[in-house]
Image 1 (cartoon, rainbow, N blue to C red):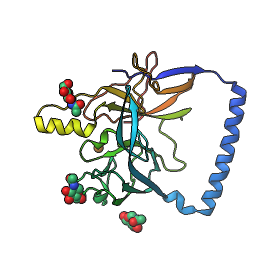
Image 2: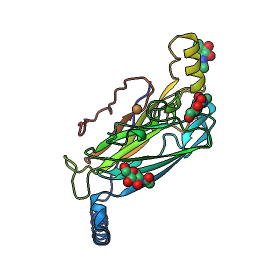
Image 3: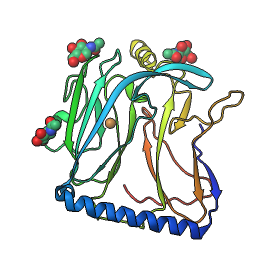
Image 4: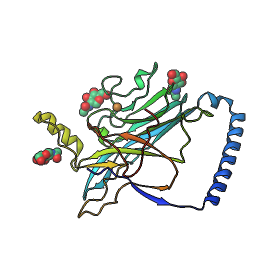
Length: 268
Ligand SMILES: *[C@@H]1O[C@H](CO)[C@@H](O)[C@H](O)[C@H]1NC(C)=O
Ligand SMILES: *[C@@H]1O[C@H](CO)[C@@H](O)[C@H](O)[C@H]1NC(C)=O
Ligand SMILES: *[C@@H]1O[C@H](CO)[C@@H](O)[C@H](O)[C@H]1NC(C)=O
Ligand SMILES: [Cu+2]
């Protein structure tokens, strides 16, 4: 089990850094003022469109390769960004051989139960070649959630972050971090995950345990195996970073720490 993030300290020239930040801020504020003037309705929440193409992709981990089911060919899948109050429309197109449905884990579906996603509970799964538009509005929630497939064991590779920012002009309830980063913890099996769960269902025994844990899709360095290494985040000494940590493992509790660093929990 390898759950370390490689933290590299880099030092930048402070003056240059502050000047760039100031310029960035100004153009950002200016753009916002123009947008706010042209579209006053944006303040009330906007519509966010996403297209999730469910496709298979070959993935190579632990010196072994297999096809996996993904959203848009990515593992983990794309991050869904929205602000509190936004209406989210996700068109899910199923290009794989499995029935699929996507659950928006933790999103309160107020009068939109049919957008919740559990297959055979709130909807029939989306069949191969078909599509479905999830339509929900995020009300009274902000922080980090995640989406995942909610049928069979497809959530092993079909998952991604949901980042809900506060309403425009509303700050975080803690000092603004220098930078934020999504950290998705997952599990990896060398075998096909549908085969793993089918075998368990047939035998009545517990499913085989995974071969590795992953951070943002990376299992880290394996002895005697040339891999793409672990997930790395470059940081500057003395600055604070917000990690949006998600446990996307199938059935496991995971514990997270960064060696020699203090973590503060900023959001339940
Ligand atoms: C796929 O879902 C449909 C309903 O949407 C269902 O009738 C069918 O049996 C499912 N197929 C499989 C292989 O589970
Ligand atoms: C999404 O649902 C809302 C009502 O909850 C409806 O007014 C809106 O037209 C729907 N949008 C789409 C694209 O279907
Ligand atoms: C599960 O583990 C058993 C015992 O190691 C092995 O024989 C079997 O092939 C594994 N199943 C899959 C789907 O990898
Ligand atoms: Cu869930």
